[in-house]
Length: 395
Ligand code: AMP
Image 1 (tube, rainbow, N blue to C red):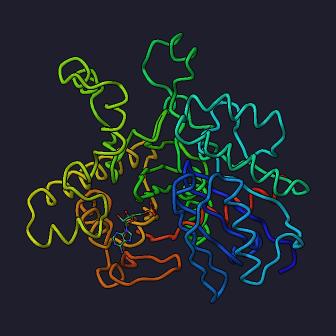
Image 2 (tube, rainbow, N blue to C red; image 1 turned 30 degrees about the vertical axis):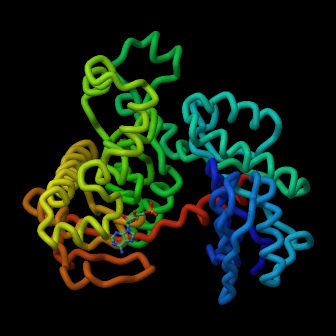
């Protein structure tokens, strides 16, 4: 390794995920996860090469989680007190209109991230806690905030604008921001590199527990399915994705649900979970194979929505060179890839190679036949590496 490593931190409200990596080649030197922060009996998992440490302890806050990370790193042979870090990169969900690109963190940036928290009330406050704790723990190192929305900051106005009263939209910063931007950016660049086609027209399917699709033309995003919040778009593990806003009004006026109850219903109790009782695609596919009708309907709704988005984005792009699968479902669920490819075949000529589709690999790979008109690729996402590269670029 030529450069000092970069520490990447992804702070959730009760979790802290971290990775120490070489920004040049993406090699992870150590990584870990602290869960149940602020609750009794937090779980910690730390991995460094062959070493894996698991522990249960009380971790009252993010500052304690970072101290614990340091302690476990030291136990695994890496003294972070004395290892110079090139930078600390932080995942921040929402940058609003304030942050169009990765930004070195100072007091002004902290205040601005706090100000845009109103757009991501569940996510940005957690990122702020992680930022503040890491700034205290590593005061000599530059810290960089990398925003999930930044890749989509320059979406064309026609894609970013809701057909809502302009004055109200402006006053309340209501527009389509898009999320999972770090993943879409990494994956689209990796796919264009793999194809050796910098001007490729790509549709990227980030299918994890959260899911979003983007259309990327020669490296620039022209469409994405998540909007002002991550609720819009595809059917997800626990989120509805697109739904008639009239349903929300009906749930309030007629069903008598409060705004918070509707929020929980749409974000946490819907999607695959709401339809079939599981948000895990492995369990869903197993249930479909076992003949479960609810699982079959959930799977069909999931694929139906995907097909609609891919068709629409192919039209927006004026053609498509490759469709990319990434994240937990995209990288692993061959049944989802097969169902989607079968439906797209007549329009796009996505000739799935069924043998390649069933193979597993941690590498970027093609799963369509050589004569496919639209290529199908599986590209493992690596948000940590993308964040580390951004952190190095701006410091
Ligand atoms: P992510 O949010 O990217 O971590 O993706 C998590 C989701 O990926 C899980 O909820 C599962 O639905 C799905 N997943 C992970 N592994 C597999 C697998 N081997 N087959 C099918 N789905 C999987």
